Length: 182
Image (cartoon, rainbow, N blue to C red):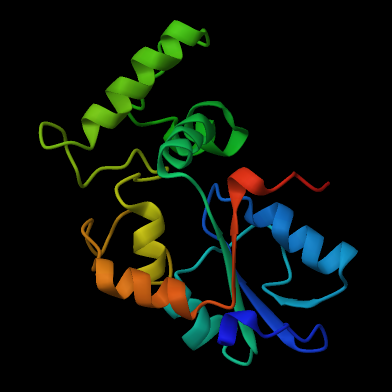
């Protein structure tokens, strides 16, 4: 019943920004186009787990919102951000992050190498100072930690807790149905 009730635009909204899930687009849309009172007020920067944001950052918010992405697309987007963005190149510069080149075949090779690093044969605890892709969105839904990008706190989130958190959110957007708003 809670999900079918209209959200009151006069209230305060907490948007949980999960990396690489269109968070900047949604925050910009909520603030600029819809003129909503959104916490956090910046579209980039600190990204918290749902529990941490509810308990510490935006505890006076009336609604909690987020956006989620297809896991396959999410992992590819994390890899591409680490490999090609200015931020990703800076944070991975002194690591062994795979960069054989910029072509399509290079991306396939580097992506495979990057993923292999996080499987049982690789060093699961090292994340190249960028994103650790294992169950990233589920970790954001279940962790009580401030930041889940590094994977600290475990890689096998409680599925029941993830679903409970998801079901208690007031709004969940799906990236694949979101057009970028600039």
